[in-house]
Image (tube, rainbow, N blue to C red; front, top):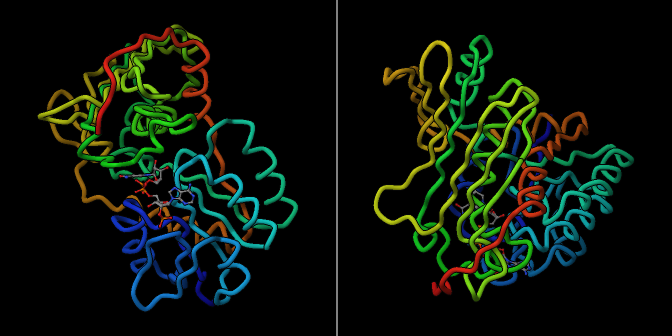
Length: 308
Ligand code: NAP
């Protein structure tokens, strides 16, 4: 079988930090080109836009869209119309409904649309899901607090409409919770703190539940200095499970159960290669729906302006 020839579109932090290395480490995948207005990679064909890439670039089979969410829908539609498979960074869109026509395009063309949730591929997520499957869950507490200045320096798009603000990392927690819990969950109330000069929240407190009234709380905060937290704590009838470090480590009553090196993006590309071989799509919108509902239900407060 020949390699899936992939072009990265939007060569920013995550493309550099994860995608290039993960493609290089994935059997059956080759990085063939980069399309980005400013950034490029030495020795790889470079184009400023996806249109230019498709018109003048080397032959490719797929694009991996690493641009901010506000511009990805149009790029995905352009790529699918040209017969390419599409991998979307998270979040898959700026709204939920915009995915529907993309899914239809991919299905009609027999091409893959892969809406990635990298945190679901963290090493302790599947062990946590399996462990919880046979326990009675009493409560869930999510704490996702990071320093925006450290992790998103200069990313103005995150504060614009559709940029999601603190839900940009928070949606990772929601992607894990919607994977590990055996029941479907929904938002019952939300408090969103908007900096006076921003269009997206800097902090959010959510209450969620399931059909049986399971209490779930989530605290997202972009103003965290000092120790960072990407933790989910689940009380069960057989002990307290903690999933920490963004899904990398799992413990029960303090005893380590799973702890492995991060291979999230390699696993994403392995899955993309497999999906593309059959032209199958994988688009789970559950985490994005929870974010959309948080915005629908959210009580808003205005807090001090954010200066990067
Ligand atoms: P980023 O550093 O801002 O990179 C995005 C790149 O896209 C920019 O460097 C820019 O490159 C290009 N771009 C920006 N605005 C554009 C526009 N209006 N039109 C076309 N291209 C544009 O952002 P990032 O951190 O890599 O995040 C990108 C996506 O990956 C986000 O959805 C984020 O949630 C997700 N993600 C990020 C991380 C992380 O740790 N940062 C982790 C996981 C997932 P040019 O100037 O060269 O065009």
